[in-house]
Length: 363
Image 1 (cartoon, rainbow, N blue to C red):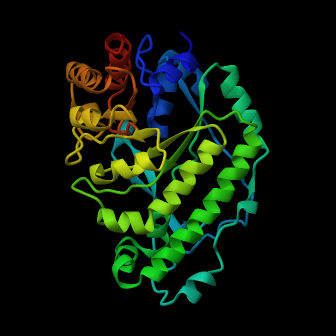
Image 2 (cartoon, rainbow, N blue to C red):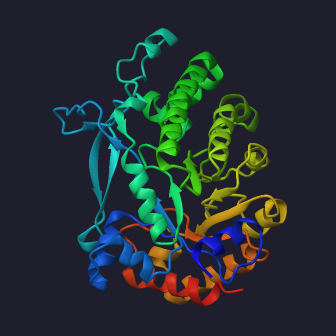
Image 3 (cartoon, rainbow, N blue to C red):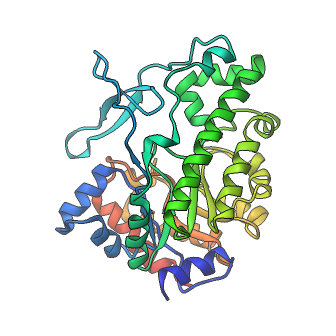
């Protein structure tokens, strides 16, 4: 069975030959795996692990040169200064970009926010490379996914947090709702046009459109379900509707405990929910499958906080088996980790994970 046939059956809530496999890992882990196997390309590694999905890079940024500050921080395309932070030690060292400050944190009015000079434009991207990226993924016979990178993924709450600050945007929901609504609308409009141009450039070659916005912490939603419905559901529904108009299945990445709004996500047209974070409260896989498994497919669920970095190969196999037994019956499940495999994970555990996928996930 080909990857395309396998995933198509799984997303139709039917059982293919095996559970489809996806690969999410930090750049440090990917680099170490390439070196371990003597590979020169990511494609070789994905084939080694029998991965069914290929993520395109998406449009190329051609906008204004990012500003560099005296402290070494570099602005992203929203004007948010970020500094590179290293974590871990030795070969387990990783890095990420940390926001230094929030440029709209002190704004007092919609007019100030409207006049912010660094709102990005869809014109700041070159969409021409997308068609070639899609063609390469299709040539490999894989499912083609457009998600964007971590700092430029169709979202509302997360970029609002970077622009306004986590505490301030949440306070805005209650104290200055007109400001919150304006920011979310501005972000939604930008990403709708950015995504639309990407779909046009892809020429109907995309299979899955994945948005990403963390709606929850590990103990609950960032806001009440009623607030989510007022402030974020309209934009979320616009994203899913756009993907569907271009013939895509729509996936969404949200860390945390988000069970109360899963029915809303389904009503908005969501096809695939990622990552089913196992450490989050009230996100037990058997219960989610029982409640929503006839209408929603699940992607992820393997722990990168505990099992992958600290477990044994046998514990990894046991977790893969548990997920297969809970989420696999009747299709509607894709093997993947609950986020990128982090730099503190032994490569032997990564290999054990993909071996378990192959051995255990067969129908």
